[in-house]
Image (cartoon, rainbow, N blue to C red; front, side, top):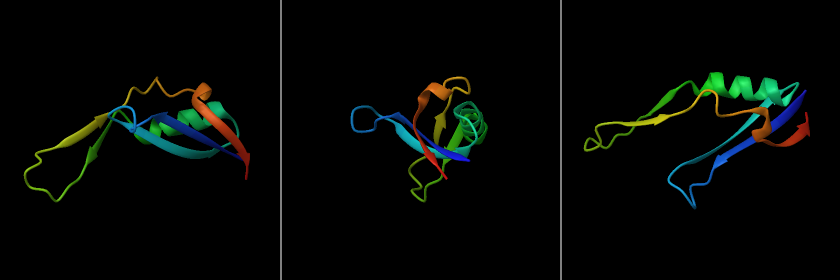
Length: 74
């Protein structure tokens, strides 16, 4: 089993970024699992009543094995 890091976007230079580490046998399998976990939208919950909603959208085909930045043995 290996662990793959996906570092997508950079919130220091753009509006959104995220990082994920996924355990899988191959980077292709890791990318597939990450896409399934993200789905097409994540709703951010907040206790601030002035914020009506925050939705973050994902392209289910955009994260690929090529985005796996490093590979570590588990």
